[in-house]
Image (cartoon, rainbow, N blue to C red; front, side, top):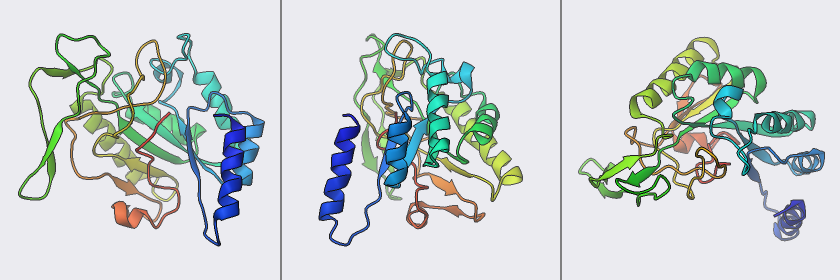
Length: 254
Protein backbone atom coordinates (compact mmCIF):
# COMPACT_ATOMS: atom_id res chain seq x y z
CA UNK A 1 0.00 0.00 0.00
CA UNK A 2 1.50 3.29 -1.08
CA UNK A 3 0.87 6.85 -0.04
CA UNK A 4 -2.17 7.12 -2.36
CA UNK A 5 -4.00 4.52 -0.25
CA UNK A 6 -3.55 6.51 2.95
CA UNK A 7 -4.47 9.77 1.26
CA UNK A 8 -7.76 8.18 0.17
CA UNK A 9 -8.29 6.73 3.65
CA UNK A 10 -7.90 10.15 5.27
CA UNK A 11 -10.22 11.68 2.68
CA UNK A 12 -12.88 9.09 3.60
CA UNK A 13 -12.38 9.86 7.27
CA UNK A 14 -12.89 13.55 6.69
CA UNK A 15 -15.94 12.92 4.53
CA UNK A 16 -17.69 10.63 7.02
CA UNK A 17 -16.41 11.90 10.38
CA UNK A 18 -19.73 13.66 11.07
CA UNK A 19 -18.17 15.99 13.61
CA UNK A 20 -16.04 13.33 15.28
CA UNK A 21 -12.31 13.74 15.86
CA UNK A 22 -10.23 10.97 14.29
CA UNK A 23 -6.60 10.41 15.29
CA UNK A 24 -4.28 8.23 13.20
CA UNK A 25 -1.16 6.29 14.19
CA UNK A 26 1.30 4.60 11.88
CA UNK A 27 4.01 2.07 12.75
CA UNK A 28 7.02 1.82 10.45
CA UNK A 29 10.64 0.70 10.29
CA UNK A 30 11.34 4.04 8.59
CA UNK A 31 13.45 2.65 5.75
CA UNK A 32 11.20 4.01 2.97
CA UNK A 33 10.20 7.34 4.49
CA UNK A 34 10.71 10.41 2.31
CA UNK A 35 9.70 14.07 2.31
CA UNK A 36 6.34 13.32 0.70
CA UNK A 37 5.38 10.76 3.33
CA UNK A 38 6.49 13.00 6.20
CA UNK A 39 4.67 16.05 4.82
CA UNK A 40 1.51 13.90 4.68
CA UNK A 41 1.97 12.76 8.29
CA UNK A 42 2.45 16.34 9.44
CA UNK A 43 -0.51 17.66 7.46
CA UNK A 44 -2.87 15.11 9.01
CA UNK A 45 -1.33 14.99 12.50
CA UNK A 46 -0.29 11.34 12.43
CA UNK A 47 1.51 9.84 15.42
CA UNK A 48 4.35 7.69 14.09
CA UNK A 49 5.95 4.70 15.77
CA UNK A 50 9.51 4.24 14.48
CA UNK A 51 11.16 0.88 15.13
CA UNK A 52 14.84 0.96 16.06
CA UNK A 53 16.69 -1.48 18.32
CA UNK A 54 19.57 0.71 19.48
CA UNK A 55 22.83 1.98 17.96
CA UNK A 56 24.22 0.51 14.74
CA UNK A 57 25.96 -2.59 16.10
CA UNK A 58 22.82 -3.67 17.99
CA UNK A 59 20.18 -2.62 15.48
CA UNK A 60 21.86 -4.24 12.47
CA UNK A 61 22.23 -7.63 14.17
CA UNK A 62 18.70 -8.61 13.12
CA UNK A 63 17.21 -5.55 11.41
CA UNK A 64 18.33 -6.32 7.88
CA UNK A 65 16.50 -6.01 4.57
CA UNK A 66 15.42 -8.89 2.33
CA UNK A 67 18.90 -8.97 0.81
CA UNK A 68 20.47 -9.30 4.24
CA UNK A 69 21.89 -5.78 4.22
CA UNK A 70 21.86 -3.57 7.36
CA UNK A 71 19.15 -0.93 7.72
CA UNK A 72 20.50 1.38 10.43
CA UNK A 73 21.42 4.23 8.08
CA UNK A 74 18.00 4.09 6.39
CA UNK A 75 16.18 4.17 9.74
CA UNK A 76 18.24 7.13 10.96
CA UNK A 77 17.52 8.95 7.70
CA UNK A 78 13.80 8.34 8.27
CA UNK A 79 14.09 9.69 11.82
CA UNK A 80 15.78 12.85 10.56
CA UNK A 81 12.97 13.36 8.04
CA UNK A 82 10.33 13.03 10.76
CA UNK A 83 12.14 15.68 12.80
CA UNK A 84 12.58 17.91 9.76
CA UNK A 85 8.82 17.92 9.15
CA UNK A 86 8.04 18.14 12.90
CA UNK A 87 6.05 14.92 12.88
CA UNK A 88 5.18 13.48 16.30
CA UNK A 89 6.85 10.09 16.72
CA UNK A 90 8.02 7.62 19.31
CA UNK A 91 10.65 4.91 19.19
CA UNK A 92 9.79 1.25 19.58
CA UNK A 93 12.57 -1.13 20.63
CA UNK A 94 12.28 -4.90 20.28
CA UNK A 95 14.38 -6.37 23.08
CA UNK A 96 16.19 -9.42 21.71
CA UNK A 97 19.24 -11.59 22.34
CA UNK A 98 21.56 -9.01 20.77
CA UNK A 99 20.57 -5.92 22.79
CA UNK A 100 19.27 -7.51 26.01
CA UNK A 101 22.50 -6.84 27.92
CA UNK A 102 22.86 -3.23 26.77
CA UNK A 103 19.87 -1.39 28.30
CA UNK A 104 21.56 1.92 29.10
CA UNK A 105 23.42 1.97 25.80
CA UNK A 106 20.07 1.63 24.00
CA UNK A 107 18.38 4.14 26.31
CA UNK A 108 21.07 6.79 26.06
CA UNK A 109 21.31 6.40 22.29
CA UNK A 110 17.58 6.99 21.90
CA UNK A 111 17.62 9.83 24.41
CA UNK A 112 20.24 11.56 22.27
CA UNK A 113 18.87 10.77 18.81
CA UNK A 114 15.22 9.79 19.23
CA UNK A 115 11.94 11.46 20.09
CA UNK A 116 12.11 11.38 23.90
CA UNK A 117 9.43 8.66 24.13
CA UNK A 118 10.56 5.03 24.11
CA UNK A 119 8.66 1.75 24.10
CA UNK A 120 10.22 -1.64 24.85
CA UNK A 121 8.67 -4.99 23.93
CA UNK A 122 10.19 -8.47 24.20
CA UNK A 123 10.97 -10.73 21.27
CA UNK A 124 10.03 -14.29 22.26
CA UNK A 125 9.34 -16.96 19.64
CA UNK A 126 8.54 -20.52 20.64
CA UNK A 127 9.46 -23.51 18.49
CA UNK A 128 8.69 -27.19 18.85
CA UNK A 129 11.76 -29.22 19.75
CA UNK A 130 13.08 -31.13 16.79
CA UNK A 131 11.58 -28.69 14.31
CA UNK A 132 13.27 -26.06 12.16
CA UNK A 133 14.04 -22.56 13.46
CA UNK A 134 10.97 -21.08 11.73
CA UNK A 135 8.48 -23.81 12.68
CA UNK A 136 6.81 -21.71 15.33
CA UNK A 137 4.86 -23.40 18.11
CA UNK A 138 1.27 -22.49 18.78
CA UNK A 139 0.77 -19.89 21.52
CA UNK A 140 0.15 -21.28 25.01
CA UNK A 141 -3.42 -21.76 26.17
CA UNK A 142 -4.37 -19.42 29.02
CA UNK A 143 -6.33 -20.41 32.09
CA UNK A 144 -7.67 -18.07 34.73
CA UNK A 145 -6.54 -18.59 38.31
CA UNK A 146 -8.58 -17.96 41.42
CA UNK A 147 -6.98 -14.52 41.77
CA UNK A 148 -8.18 -13.57 38.30
CA UNK A 149 -4.77 -13.77 36.61
CA UNK A 150 -4.60 -15.47 33.22
CA UNK A 151 -1.55 -17.75 33.18
CA UNK A 152 -0.23 -19.90 30.34
CA UNK A 153 -0.44 -23.68 30.30
CA UNK A 154 3.00 -24.54 28.96
CA UNK A 155 3.36 -27.64 26.83
CA UNK A 156 6.53 -29.66 27.20
CA UNK A 157 8.78 -30.10 24.21
CA UNK A 158 8.89 -26.43 23.24
CA UNK A 159 11.80 -24.02 23.36
CA UNK A 160 12.56 -20.53 22.08
CA UNK A 161 14.58 -19.32 19.11
CA UNK A 162 18.21 -18.36 19.59
CA UNK A 163 17.42 -14.69 18.96
CA UNK A 164 14.63 -14.54 21.58
CA UNK A 165 15.26 -12.41 24.65
CA UNK A 166 16.10 -14.37 27.80
CA UNK A 167 13.92 -13.94 30.92
CA UNK A 168 16.44 -12.60 33.44
CA UNK A 169 18.26 -10.26 31.03
CA UNK A 170 14.89 -8.90 29.88
CA UNK A 171 13.86 -8.17 33.45
CA UNK A 172 17.22 -6.53 34.17
CA UNK A 173 16.90 -4.51 30.95
CA UNK A 174 13.63 -2.96 32.10
CA UNK A 175 14.77 -2.44 35.69
CA UNK A 176 18.00 -0.67 34.72
CA UNK A 177 16.25 1.64 32.30
CA UNK A 178 13.51 2.49 34.79
CA UNK A 179 16.00 3.09 37.63
CA UNK A 180 18.08 5.37 35.41
CA UNK A 181 15.03 7.23 34.13
CA UNK A 182 13.53 7.80 37.58
CA UNK A 183 16.85 9.11 38.94
CA UNK A 184 17.92 11.28 36.04
CA UNK A 185 15.19 11.92 33.48
CA UNK A 186 11.81 12.28 35.18
CA UNK A 187 9.98 15.11 33.46
CA UNK A 188 12.26 15.07 30.43
CA UNK A 189 11.22 11.90 28.67
CA UNK A 190 8.70 9.08 28.54
CA UNK A 191 9.26 5.35 28.71
CA UNK A 192 6.80 2.47 28.31
CA UNK A 193 7.79 -0.80 29.96
CA UNK A 194 5.74 -3.78 28.84
CA UNK A 195 5.28 -6.68 31.24
CA UNK A 196 4.11 -9.26 28.74
CA UNK A 197 4.78 -9.83 25.05
CA UNK A 198 2.91 -8.25 22.22
CA UNK A 199 0.47 -10.55 20.43
CA UNK A 200 1.16 -9.87 16.81
CA UNK A 201 1.51 -11.45 13.42
CA UNK A 202 4.24 -14.00 12.68
CA UNK A 203 7.61 -12.42 13.26
CA UNK A 204 10.41 -12.49 10.71
CA UNK A 205 12.75 -10.52 12.97
CA UNK A 206 15.48 -13.15 12.62
CA UNK A 207 18.94 -13.45 11.12
CA UNK A 208 18.72 -12.92 7.37
CA UNK A 209 15.25 -11.40 7.25
CA UNK A 210 13.18 -8.43 8.28
CA UNK A 211 9.54 -7.75 8.96
CA UNK A 212 6.89 -7.65 11.62
CA UNK A 213 7.52 -8.88 15.13
CA UNK A 214 5.84 -11.66 17.01
CA UNK A 215 5.98 -12.65 20.65
CA UNK A 216 4.42 -15.83 21.93
CA UNK A 217 5.40 -16.18 25.57
CA UNK A 218 7.92 -14.92 28.07
CA UNK A 219 8.90 -15.74 31.62
CA UNK A 220 8.11 -12.10 32.34
CA UNK A 221 4.41 -12.92 31.91
CA UNK A 222 2.31 -10.69 34.11
CA UNK A 223 -0.22 -7.92 34.29
CA UNK A 224 -0.45 -5.22 31.62
CA UNK A 225 2.56 -2.92 31.48
CA UNK A 226 2.85 0.37 33.32
CA UNK A 227 3.80 3.65 31.67
CA UNK A 228 5.95 6.26 33.36
CA UNK A 229 5.13 9.78 32.23
CA UNK A 230 6.62 13.26 32.78
CA UNK A 231 4.08 14.03 35.52
CA UNK A 232 6.17 11.72 37.78
CA UNK A 233 3.34 9.20 38.14
CA UNK A 234 3.24 5.62 36.91
CA UNK A 235 -0.02 4.95 35.12
CA UNK A 236 -1.97 1.78 34.42
CA UNK A 237 -3.88 1.20 31.17
CA UNK A 238 -6.98 3.19 32.16
CA UNK A 239 -5.16 6.31 33.29
CA UNK A 240 -2.76 6.10 30.35
CA UNK A 241 -5.64 6.61 27.93
CA UNK A 242 -5.86 10.20 29.14
CA UNK A 243 -2.43 10.95 27.70
CA UNK A 244 -2.52 11.33 23.94
CA UNK A 245 -0.11 9.13 22.06
CA UNK A 246 1.62 7.46 24.98
CA UNK A 247 0.18 3.93 24.92
CA UNK A 248 2.48 1.51 23.08
CA UNK A 249 1.22 -0.01 19.86
CA UNK A 250 1.22 -3.67 20.85
CA UNK A 251 -0.69 -4.97 17.86
CA UNK A 252 1.87 -4.11 15.20
CA UNK A 253 5.54 -3.37 15.12
CA UNK A 254 7.70 -2.85 12.14
